[in-house]
Length: 302
Ligand code: PSU
Ligand code: MN
Image 1: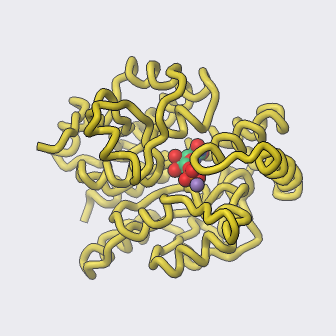
Image 2: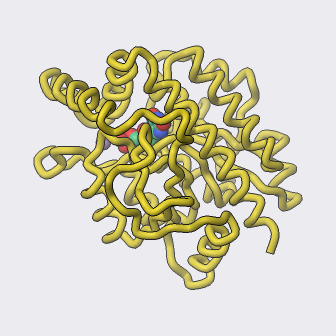
C-alpha cells in the first residue's frame, strides 16, 4: 500500500473522473511569509474550483503523503517553522521516517503522478542558477520534468536564474516548453524574459492534446506551460533586474548554498521591493491556477 492519504473531496473527484489540479506546498512554507502564504494557498484553491476543477495541495505529514489538505492542515503548515523542503532526493526518506515536509515542484510532480493527477499549478519552477558552471546548482525540478508525466503550469522560471541555460537544459532533457498566448518565455515577475519560448500555444485544448499525445507516443516526462503574469501585476524587467543582482550579491557574500538559495533570494527580493514582489507572485500563482484548472477540464473531455 502506498502511504497516500486522499482528502475526501479529491478521492471522489478522482474516482468520478473529474478534473483535479495538483498544488505544491514549498511555496507556502518557503516561498511566502505568513499570513499571505496561507491566504494565497486558499485563494489558489478557490481559483481552481472556480474553473470547475478540484485542488489537491500536497504535503508530507507524519510520514504520509497527503493529496489534498484540509483548511486546518493548510493553516498549520503555513504557520510551522523549520519545515523540511522536500525534493525528489528527500521524499522517500521523509516518508519512511515518519517525517513532515513541504513538497517542491519536483516532489509534487512525483506525488501527483502517484495519485493519478496530470496537471499541476505553481509559481515558477526552479532551474539552472547563475554561476551553475562553478556551483553546479541545477534544480531537481528540471530533471523531474524530463521523467514524470505531469503538465506543470508556471510563470516561466524565476528571474533569479540563468534563463538561457534553463531553456537549454530543458531542450536537452526533451521537455516541451510552451509559452501560453505569446512568443516570449516569461520571467516570473515580468511577462517577457527577452528569450523566445521554443513552443507557443494559444488554447488549452492544444495543451491538453499535446499532453495526451506524449502519453500515446510513450514519451516519459511532462510539459512546462509558461503562463505570463497578468499585465497589471508585472514588475518590468529593467526594474526587477537590479534588485535580483543585489540579492544575488548578498547570497554570495553570505555563502548561501543548496536548498537555501531560492528561499533566501525570494525573501531578500521581497524586502528590497517592499513587498511588491510578493503581490506579483500572488497574482501570477492565481493566474496559473486558473489556467491549470482549464487544462485539467480540457483533459477530462475527449
Ligand atoms: N514558485 C514560487 N515560489 C516558490 C517555489 C516556486 O512562486 O518558492 C519553490 C518551488 O517549490 C520550487 C522551488 O520547486 O521553489 C525551487 O527550489 P530549488 O531552486 O532549490 O530547486
Ligand atoms: Mn538548488
